Length: 237
Image (cartoon, rainbow, N blue to C red; front, side, top):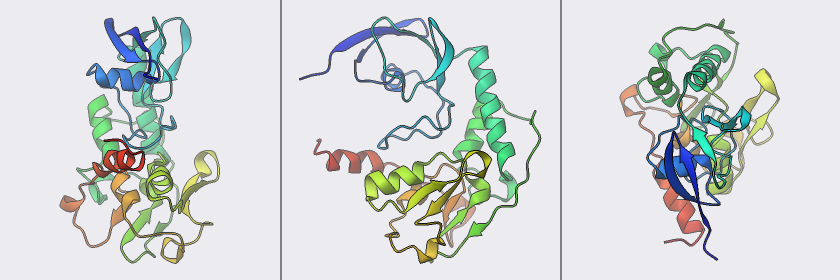
């Protein structure tokens, strides 16, 4: 049965959307751009980064657009001083939590976190840096995991599980101690489940996962294969 179409307003504009759409889906179809980092077309949404938070009339708290379904008559605001304040704070906390030194990062110029900071106007930090001591796992013959650059968006976890079907990646720990791991926290190079497909590397928004032997200028990620593979797996044209 085809999905019912409902109407709502986004930033004062009347728009229509399928009732199974999220606010992010509806906004995208209406050509309204909402900032995201953990969202990636072709993967399920988990609301991890919270950058896509929006205001919904009648609800005092902010809601993540990527996992909030639309409803009839909903009034959504995607851009306001309040939202900008929270989004800038989130980006600052991401930078402060780990060691994101752009000038020496392999993804300098190709980093979505860096681009998001520029988009939101984050030009200084209002919170102290933690400077944690984190390892770099270069045990894989082709790829490297640098925990210093990871923002825990879990794109790698979802791509490995939902697209490749290997589920090599997972998250261990909680809060500031959380980190992505391979298998049972084994070195990546010793993983028996990794197929070395490179999907995790290509969906990583930062320099946390990168390919060995490539220069900074070659660190362009290839993400267009995800929607295609998802459609083929689901039998869609």
